[in-house]
Length: 228
Image (tube, rainbow, N blue to C red):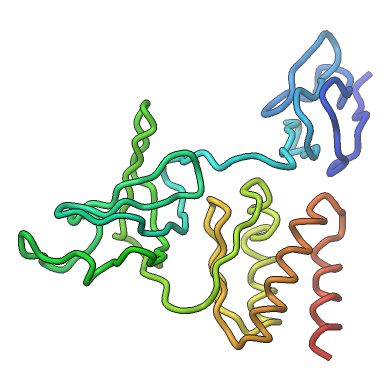
């Protein structure tokens, strides 16, 4: 007999039996023990087809090739910028990947990106020693001007973005804010001050209630009530 013992989006702890039988497949945060799939970490149960995984409730960001992140310039030398990634590892943005414009040798790179600037950038390489390389060559990659920066739990980013971007699009529409969510848990928000505050409150609500079913409708009602 095959059946799920835990409902999707329920919180599990290590040792919980999630599914019984051989029709379900263990994935991230789970393991098989005989006829059972067990939880190996605390988090939210997620079912993708027949694949069972656990989305951790908390955790540090680990840089991955292809991720689009929001980073902060923390150092500048003659060849590159060093970027904080909201992880244990900083990253390097070389001159050739930092701009499509010609840069004279020895030029002052702070004229392009200065210490303290935030950028939306893409990870193009992560070595086995966790050396991280970035690029600004790609659609939507740019320096961020104005607005406010907040940090969220990186594991909650998919919930904030929503399926095919549905959640963040709704927040943008109902707050009249520009919003960019980095996969490293850094969020940039720009709008009128009162709208920015509402957007921040909304994102914090999603972060706190990411395990709740029907969250999209709940957030929509929250925003519509706040705008009345």
